[in-house]
Image (cartoon, rainbow, N blue to C red; front, side):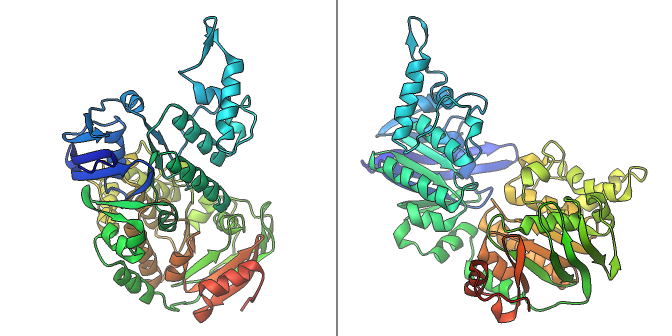
Length: 503
């Protein structure tokens, strides 16, 4: 055992009914180190963290801190050992003040009563160390997600954490906020904390981490020094195949396969966007590229009727139509996967089968109920067709990984037999292997004649998937690109206000 290790987990095994979640997994962490824990959805990252934090109990294996074996049977025991976790969705109390959130459960007392003056003073002092000058007497929900995460980290440090686990902390942050978080992480690293960093953003891994541990299918793949592991090799280890070959296969499918016009907007607008004109063709993946807030999602919602169109015209198959709401869109053979999978997509307590048929049932109407036998046939078909990893269609969707949830949502809309499929951030928060699979599915649909809209913040996958690109800036389409002009440099120039073209 390396004497420099703060934490050593060896031969960790964890089984659930019918599933081996962890099989002989190893993980180590040094004091003063930022260590990335990577792998596809379902690789075992979350289960390993739950074992370390006492949420789940391992079946076999050992955990040691500073060379001494420890047993962690609850989150409270983990905290007593100095292990704290900050999750993607901040687990603080939004209606308590900032100070109350920091000191809840460990309030200083004066004459047998909670000393609120002291709590507020300590909170201000603590947050100054994180370069946060905020009113600690205000409710937490007055502040942005980024600030809430800093407060959660500050609380974790103040409870004398030795190990800080950051689970997808950057998924909802801007680039400026991410840089600020990395400054804090590096400050804590210098103070001797060991930091476990879980993320899907590989560029961030290479920017801030010292080592990487990769899990795949619940098994330990290896631990590597970040600076010595090329990104392409890392991706290959995560998905178990050469990523370059997969990427090349995908890229070769992007051809100008455009058929006749399917949908056209003329000077269309809602309360959120105006003067939008473009057409979508059958057999083509059309991308909408631009910075956050540029109008990408607003266009998707306009087409789908989620935002009411109050100006301009919409044509479907050369006939003017009036889409007043999403149900009108569904009946016009238009499908839409929202960027917010959890809030606007999955219905967690329903089964995979029930989630798949819900849009088709809406399209048919309540008087034409879908029989169980038909629902089961549809579910079985799409589970096989899309490679959804599940024991059965009776599994609740909330129990699936993010990538498999996204495939169920795709199945939901494909079950309606759409002619236009709009995908807004379809691969956000899912692993790189599932991303590649979804990209391939989209391009196959286009090859079979469907019109597809693809919206993503990741330029790499936009370039891989799209044969036509609409570039947006300040809620206007400033360029329409095809062929060789679909490249990152040209798109960035258009976004920046250079090289604009509508042809």
